[in-house]
Length: 293
Image 1: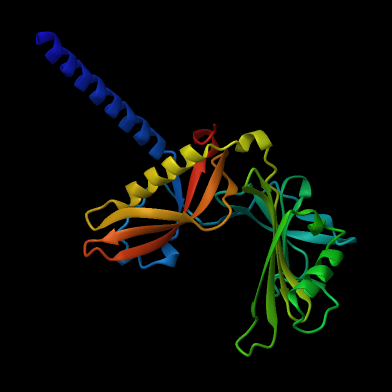
Image 2 (image 1 turned 90 degrees about the horizontal axis):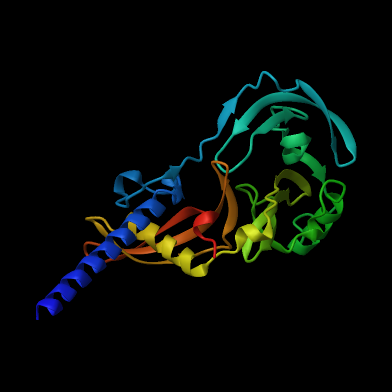
């Protein structure tokens, strides 16, 4: 009998120890799981969720005294002299130098990364020969041909397009084309282009996330557990209770604090004290090292 009681006692101690170790590991993991600042998307005063490890979307603008005042950059087979304006720092992106290629008043800027790689162009830098407010596929074909000297868009695995009116009068359409590649189901490098219905290409953004395939051997089990852990911590408050979540879009590679991460576009479903179902869109960032098989 004494041996049986001792066995039960030891079993309880072991179970408690395992439970404590599990809670300790979960707490350690939580401190490395981040969320993007989405406070602009909701009423902060009425938000009842528990936000931790928030990554700011703020862009820091500085004057780099070591930056070249002028550079010669080839844009679509045409060499142009560009003038230094400022340097940008933002979470998830490397340092970017902003140069003026035309008129500041017209927002004509070029954004340069390492070795003068073009990461973005704003202002109308190209005009497509297309019918006014043409079908999306017509615009896409013309765009891909015109941008070929700068970037081969046809080499991307996926493309999404959207069309909206450009101004209050609905005079022009506004096309957005988003090209991206995936590795093991996770979004890597991408290009976003904006085109007006009259053929003006007025913005281009290039995100060169070259990720080694071995960096993205993600465990789906770990992924689900860590996302649930973060969202439960966010939603289980005195006013709300976590229910479930959905991943909205293809998760994408994201670099934060020098570390390779995955960013998830999440819709959380949770309940309030009256048992009403509520939803919230959040962007969760998890380091790849926590997700590996």
